[in-house]
Length: 336
Image (cartoon, rainbow, N blue to C red):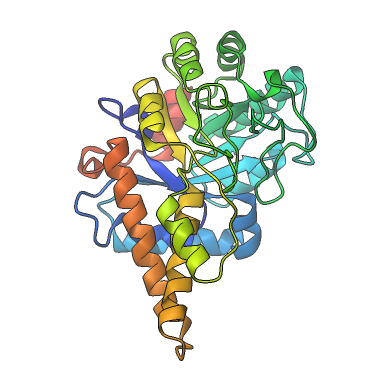
């Protein structure tokens, strides 16, 4: 992943989704193909199993050999989890040392340093890149942390815990050697991010520039950054869904982040909402239909459309041809 992000030209950023069933969106129907990070959350790894995920990706790569692909493990809660993913064929891992092993208890800075540095040492030796996290995702409105697939701080957090400190970020990067850094700026996992259109008091986009100024050579990551399209919420509600009023991270704010060092944007909720809305819509329109493949085909089309929109907005559309695959051995040599 370090190589893919480093090749981002003129403020480009790839997007990613959690579930590898989305693998087709990167090739079929895309007007301007983009490099893609296929990211597996803890829930996806538990749901499908790492062996199945690995072979799904290998099949996708075989079908589309011209497209650059990174297989990234999201939110590893221990070095052991990250090592298992590396053994399973992941080419990039995230060590989330902002939380303890239970994935719920906020960890000390020293603990985060120690476990992240250990993963970097192990991963870099075999050419695998590492994403770390500094700060906890959570709502600056409520103080409640975001939770995803069982990973997320429990209880109420202070603003300091939910905002990455630029000076501490510089120290963290220097002492761990991470390739990418997930930062906390008031975003959270899932669909329920903000109760109103976010402004600077609840979405600290300006902080990204300050962090980037201190770690200009580190790829910044925005977790919990789905935009929560209102049109898909309306479709879900129209066809029996019960999703309360909620707002996401505006695309233009993400673009501001990209201009200030963000190179990976996590938008899985947008894909989930589009797929869910499309499936609900399909079965509502065709009430006698019982073949799930029809709904899944509609879901795939909706996911592809969301991805295409984000590829274009984030500047990664059409960049696939400018990327060249780099072997893990070559990456390992670059870390040595």
